[in-house]
Length: 233
Image (cartoon, rainbow, N blue to C red; front, side, top):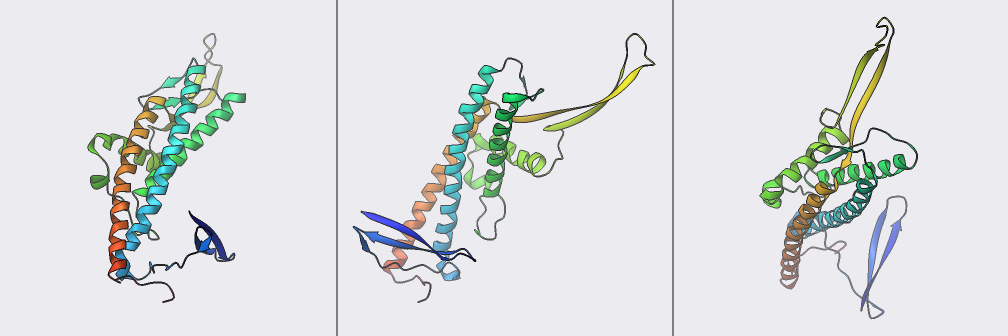
């Protein structure tokens, strides 16, 4: 049985390493140099591995979010809804806590998903919508990207939040009035939309795993042909 142990080499810089064991005996491990441009396949393999980890996390969060949103919708009688969002008018007590939890999960999913399709210098990989997203999930992908870009990261779309100011006149004496501010925010996805998100993430994870597995085989072939360069070698 193979086991691993992660070692922190330098706690100031965060440098780390891994020790591998087979049936309790330490294995010789050659670390492929990802800074060497000749190790292009290994660099891609590393990047797709990080992406696959992110998608697995997104799937886990989306499934947890679905359960919580579904329970919340069943308990609440007066929820305003748009096509994809629940709108909360009152925030108090226990409801405020669960609403905040749901919003944080909703925000995290939007941010991590957006990172997969944005330029990333450290990973050297940005997923392409045309290549990785099935056409039937384009609307899900586009909605998540819009939420990330126009609501979570930058507030620039009144579709997700808007405030209004009113002068309220007393019906008995309109010379008496007051000024109020009112805001409406789309707090988190509906359970139906989360269902679609889960299906989209599941499909995306399968595509990325296929690519990751293909690269694994490519690197194995490169090792057999002695075409890899290693760290400290």
